[in-house]
Length: 389
Ligand SMILES: *Cc1c(COP(=O)(O)O)cnc(C)c1O
Image (tube, rainbow, N blue to C red; front, side, top):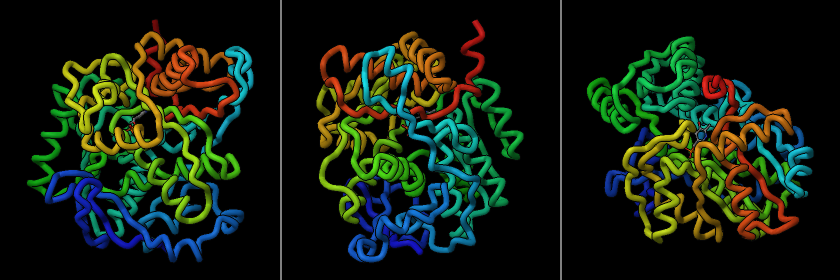
């Protein structure tokens, strides 16, 4: 049972039928968001119901957009550990530093959350072929869920992505096209074939369901912290679905009466080699200019332009958060610091959150004793080559 009612443009508020396939808003080309009957949900979906639920993100199925549960595809995604750091905290001389370890998800990244919902909903709406341009983890996650749903998966990747990302997709049955160019070039090629063959395009924020999967990180952080949100959340930002999703989740949970009005300050971290959100935040603009010559070892952060830029910037500003960039050297050092103290082999994007934490503590923006959650968005395993020299 789901309380989803309709889709609404995140920019111009135009409404769409939730029982039809949609990509961007046809009026303004901006992302569509799923809306729910929160009044009704407030009476019927009380948090005590969670006690007997599955240890997956489907524990919140009332606030997810799938109506026919026989169409859902699941590999055990979500409900990842929220770890209170011990040896890392001691090293840094802090007390309340947590890591949400998203590397524990199927296909070893939090992309599983979003693609699980995108593919489940597409399955419900009768889709047979799906397409994605991706710099890595999203393609693997889509391939996995498409395989389970019996859909044909088409992946478009820059030809310089690390080999494990490519081989994973192949092993999961996807047809992989390597493109001589950046993710934006992959997007163009994918789009042409989407139009030609009627495939469903599941690019970041170009369909409304991936964000619904990712928002469950917000529900989980709240539940795992006993409904008291942390002071700060640090999130490695590419397309920004997770950050925007969590911000949406907090609003929904307040309406459900699960939490109060206190919100974490949302911090977006990017690489100095590709930092369009940091620049837009600093220049105080509503949208972000595309970044030229994007370059970083953290593939998930190599996103020069995001369709949801204004939603990311809105969440950062409304939360009194901030945006910071860190160098590849800093993020790799920080990854290793987490590894040798906490025993977690984190993705470089995860390392970036610790590098940002160090900067913000040094500048006094994060105060002693504040509760901080770092998002390790993936496992280090597929990036193994980075540690080879
Ligand atoms: C995709 C990805 C990101 C960026 O996530 P967005 O929600 O698109 O901002 C960060 N880390 C990893 C490991 C990723 O795969």
